[in-house]
Image (cartoon, rainbow, N blue to C red; front, side, top):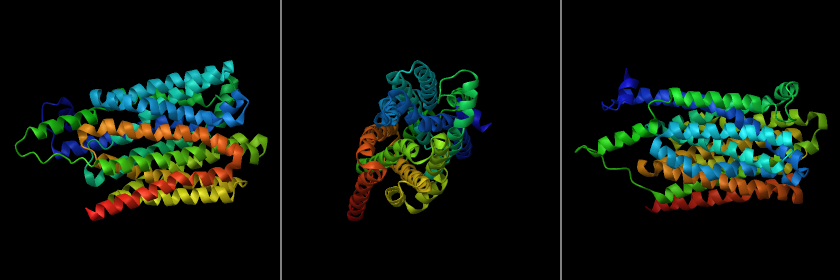
Length: 422
């Protein structure tokens, strides 16, 4: 069997073996994304509402998204280093364990009415999300260059299912939670906990062989051969632009998305807030992940930088709609879908560009730095978004969010000129 030969490590795998292993790896990672996406979608929807409820101040609601992104930022590099030493499977399961702890802490915080404890729990969920983000890089460890964007995008796309289902479980989760005496706004976390347990079992039992460890072994074997090809060149300038594109697009998305549940609570009827938030965030998450295979294919065909710029165009369109129609529920829905699409295009293409600009030996470390930068910027942006929302409203927040979009466009021009002159 090809998989057993590859896993054994005693026989150098053929191209056919590697192709079969890569397909299996992508399927396993995609299934894991479906499961972990349930927890991600529920936290996106409930975090701001729980923060506002426990703190009693809507201005502090942005701290929920700040906490989840800060948790991801603090653990992205340690998880990447763990992956480099022990493989992707160990890093991913460590993230699952962190998320399970976080869910339990969030439920306890809601029961005890402790706002600081809530932020701690959400930060642990963020640590789990850091591992989820690194799944997209795991899909590129064994990928051929011509398919790297599509394989990465397939794993990103799989988050659509869990991410859309998660917000839609708010209402049934509340009913189930109330029936067993759970605190208000925490019932949906029952589904999140079960999904994380299943993802943990999937990675432990099925993600074999480990894609990063196998890629490292293949590189060592190839370097020992007298006919080995030249090692991949390091292009740090291009890698820095990729990191900028991913981080700036993420902070734009996170800042506006984090404040949307609070904004919707002001423009819809009180008894319809939970439904409106669930539908809007579900549509937004679909925008984030639903068309990622399309953007991956475009990145493989048209180039990474062009698709990054396309993402900025979509983000700018989203912000224009939000600034023009802030008091329309339909307008907010359209803006959030476009916001997700822009994030998807920039993240898929930027992640593929970062991988291609970095030799295998440096990839885990640089990928961890990219995720740390991305999530740390989003954490700061989410805190500032709450202050901006209170000062100038949802439309003013949308206009401020154009700043990182402009920064990426300027970076694309600089990189394009540098490559042309080279």
